[in-house]
Picture 1 (cartoon, rainbow, N blue to C red):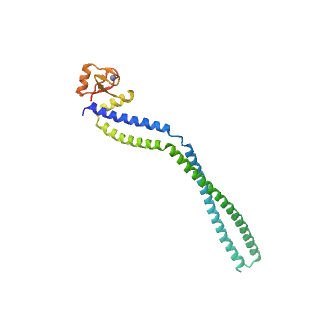
Picture 2 (cartoon, rainbow, N blue to C red):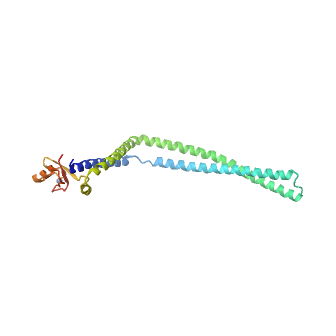
Picture 3 (cartoon, rainbow, N blue to C red):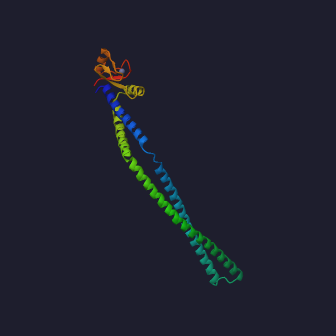
Length: 233
Ligand SMILES: [Zn+2]
C-alpha cells in the first residue's frame, strides 16, 4: 500500500470521527434541559440526609435515656437497699434521684416530639422519592431516543478511535506530521482525491506532470492551488 493511500484511509477514519462528534454535539443540544430531574435529586438527597440525622439523634436519645435509667436504678438501690444509713447521705441521694427523674422526663418528651417529626420527615422523603421517579420517567419519555442515539454514537466513536490508532501507526512518521498540520488548516481534509484530472479539494484542473507524479504514488504530491496532498484511487 502506498504512503498516500495509508494517509487517505487515516483521513477517512478521522472524517468519520469528526462526523460522529458533530452528531453527538447536535444531540446534546437537542436533549432537553434536565434541571427538573437534577432539582428532584437534590431535594431527595436533602430530605434523606435530614432523615438520617434525625434517626441518629433518636438513637442517641434512646441510648441516653437507657443510660440514665441504669444510673437511677443504682441510686435507687443505694437509697432503699439499707447500706446507706446517714440521713444527710440519704437526702443527697434522694435529690440526685429526683434530678435524674427530671432529666429523663425532659428527654422522654424530646423523644416523643422527635418521633412525630420523624414520621413527618419520612413522609417528606417518600414524597421526594416519588417526585424524582416521576421527573425521570417524564424526561426519559421525551429524550429516550436521543439518549440511545448518543450512546450508539459514543460507542461508534470509541471503536473508530481504536481503528485510528492502528491506521496512524501504519503511516510514516514524517508523513503523519504533514498530514496533521494540513488537516488543521484545510478543514479536516488534508488529502484530496483526483477525479478526471481535477483536484476535488479546490476543483482546479491539474497539470499533466503533476498527475503523472500522483499516479506513481512514490512521494507526496501537493495540489499547486489548495496545497492538499493529492490521491488517486
Ligand atoms: Zn486543490
